[in-house]
Length: 348
Image (cartoon, rainbow, N blue to C red):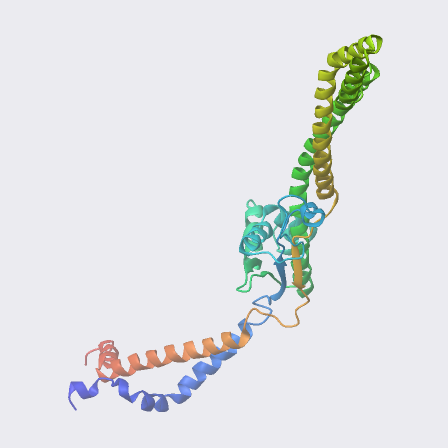
């Protein structure tokens, strides 16, 4: 038989497997057994996963959505949010504020087995937190928060807590802005009220001087003056002229103060509304999401996938066994192994 026929032919793999099936079966069995043992809870901690699903809301101002006002047409307080709202919610869910509160509330340092004497304990906490807790936007516009933990109850509690903290963190941020807006609106309102009181006092003094309806008084006196002139009542004419002179002295102030009073009153109404809106935003806790599916305690672990580990272990070991035996037969057929054995014998 020539050298080409002695070389191992890959087309005879089936015959090769039949020839070595006992060895391959033992290798596969031992690998599967090792996979069963080393994929158990003694070597790999099982992990449970809980997921909370929510939709973002479309508005961040309860006062404009509920109380209405200019520029609020089309706003619906109960409308679902869009892509931008979902991305904003995702950013909040992944914020340091939520991570630190969850870590403190559930004592994640101890729960993750991070020692108090470790040099980079916070870095390890951040890394472990990122490995076990994730959030994403679904294709339907919802936001999912998934939590993996060795304790199924803890996984569900953390997922629900993160969803609740998303509202708390956003309300704290908007509270600071709402407080500033309220202080500005209240200051403007108080300033307008002061201007209104000063204007009313000034107008009251003008009215006490006899000017209480400039247009009406002027029209009435002018008509009476014409009557007295036609009747030749000089005494009446002089009296009316004196009245008109008095009106001319205080008329300008009356008109200015009256118009100013109307403008201040109009601004005061608008300022009062803005202050009311700011106070509404300040005093009310706003939900930034609709909870679709709250997280619940998982009944089955998601990691490790034991059957997959066993299958890959058995398959991989069997495949490597086939390769090793192929190499072995090829070396034997070429006489390489026999030459090594004979080389170790002493010459006769």
